[in-house]
Image 1 (cartoon, helix red, strand yellow):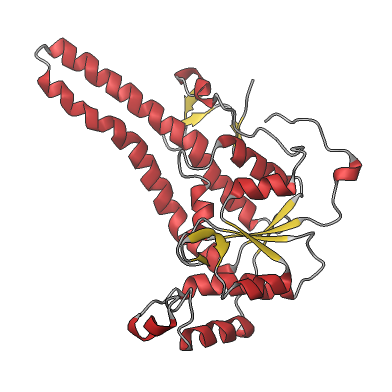
Image 2 (cartoon, one colour; image 1 turned 90 degrees about the horizontal axis):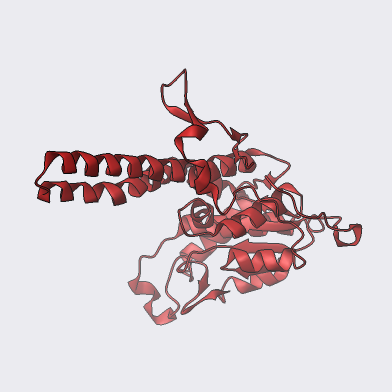
Length: 293
């Protein structure tokens, strides 16, 4: 982990920025080739150094715990499968020596792909779970009666975006029911409303292109939700990088948790056999960080 110059005292805040994260963004944070390493490093830097504090509604935490393990396994399988599919080409090779050599290369590539996922993106998943559980870094507001009252009212009236279409004339012809997303949004709203003065500013960040945004423009919050956001001063973004540029315009918060060239640390010399599970472990991973020389 490498640290850049520390910010001067005039740049420090008395209160952190509050950042509400939707489940899909948390998943994207460890999905391969979705969130660039530079953006991920900056996000974690702002979090660990107190520039931001996460607001993870109870429903988001539940969904994260439900999906993260399956997604982690899925991404690991996909990394390996992409290479394994080439193994069939050995059937078109005539010489046995050529086949053996080809399959040995496939085996090596599979091993490297698995390592690359596990010690880059897999570590992200594990660290995110730890950060969510840390009360110094994350607040987990719970659903309550006030939240339920708003959600039930929207549901009974089939109001968009969670329970009906934007066209009022079509609301009796739809069965849309995005209860979980409604609970996420209004749990965040209720918490922020009751904790004014806790945060410098509050943001709601999601990459969901269907259930929070204005129809046809996923960069803008749905008009039926905008009054609630305006009431508590909550800013809606559909892009994590945009948030980071706003909360850290001078780019002081840039700890390098993951090197851009971390693949050089995936060769055999950096691994040893685990005496407990007989699998392999990386010699340079401490507390979920792939160390650099």
